[in-house]
Image 1 (cartoon, rainbow, N blue to C red):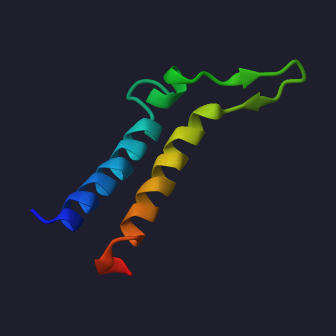
Image 2 (spheres, rainbow, N blue to C red):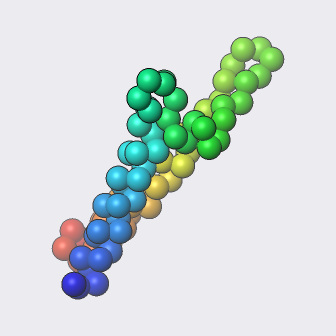
Image 3 (cartoon, rainbow, N blue to C red):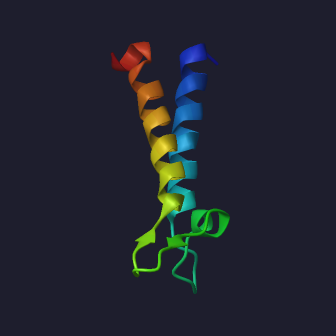
Length: 73
């Protein structure tokens, strides 16, 4: 297997993992990343969802990796 093909498979796997982390679990409205990093509640009623940062970072890394491949330049 060529080096570029391995990099593409790794980047596609990262995109798959990001999707799985953000997908809600059956019979529950929370995703896996919501259980790993809980949301932060403030006194005024606002909420910050830090669990969305992990899938976004994985997606950015994977798309940058795919666009750096020679085939997609």
